[in-house]
Image (cartoon, rainbow, N blue to C red; front, side):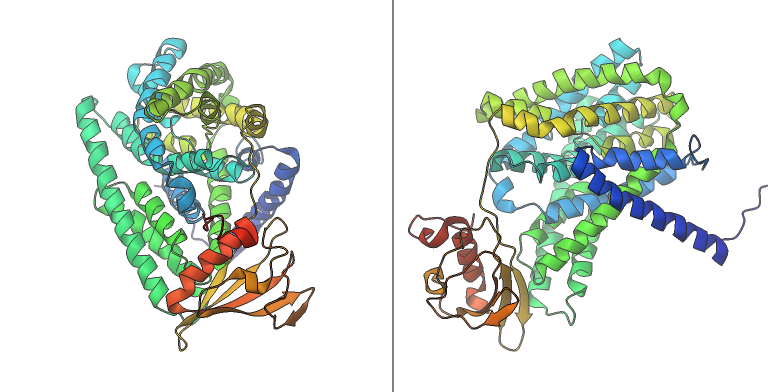
Length: 501
């Protein structure tokens, strides 16, 4: 029996040093990625490979630990994505996103499994596992890429909602295909998927609403407590959904979506905190997955991965978009972009550890094929997505939205709203009096070029101005909506019928 060495303070110091260096290199890699257009996930995977047994020599083969930590990272990534998703953008796209995440997944799994069986020679169980694993679009990849590409809101909303929704049915399918014994009939799996999604949706919506209600009506003693509370509520939604035998991934996304659109106090601080946690989760997950792979074993699986990826990208994904969008009469250009924007990332690689943990025969080869497929097609699709959007003439320029932060004034039953006017905002050139804020709300201070002053009704607002607005509780939402409407439509926003959305 091998004796396990206890973790000493010296070993802890070494571990902290290595982790800190990896994080610093990963942060610097974001800058390199921004300049070169190379997806960050490839850089992080490369870090893991460089540290691994074919690089520095760290041997890591614990697929079960990778799966557990990967699930934890996915929870944080989905929470961050839901918190950053605007309800007004995904609301019109929900029906299409729901169909893509269900019927579209079924089409994609079937076509990809057929290709894996006949092109690569895998048996049907392994082929179905690969089809299910790679049919899920990656939330981290989609959220990070779409925020750099100015697309029409319907397309952005569809892709973001799809990436948040489709993890749930795919996880159910992969677990079912990886289970020991015969695969359940399709109608049994369909019933399980519907039940788990329904439970996850109910739990996520309930916890999200209760959490938002509590945070809006309880003034916490420190602003730094709000981000912690929001993330804790999101994790509770995942755990509650999973313990209720529902989809925890759907629960955490829906709860985070509600929290992100509830106009909570100190929202920019909460958003920044969640984004930082999301980056840490991505870095840790990608580096861990890079450690798990053995590069010298990938040679024989490169061409099979390219063949399966070609079938997925050129046949399965376009066909799933075509079938899913048929009832909605989506123009062909938007269908083409939806087909090309089905980005894969860490999610398929994490899901590929499920058959390894379940001891499915030849599961290591399945993992290698998925790993190579993700790398190759991320290199192809991610950097070319802006070019494809321009060629399809689907780029869109919009006025910059206002980031409004709210701090509760408990004794006054009011709120202090702070905002900065971006350079592309149409609030530039508007007079204070032309804001037409509701009674009970007023601009109390303007900070311009480092100097603050109390504005007059005739004061003209400029780009870069910072405003402090005091609003009583009954008119807080109306005041914020009016400020956003002027930021998007200028002084004529009311006359044009333009609202915040």
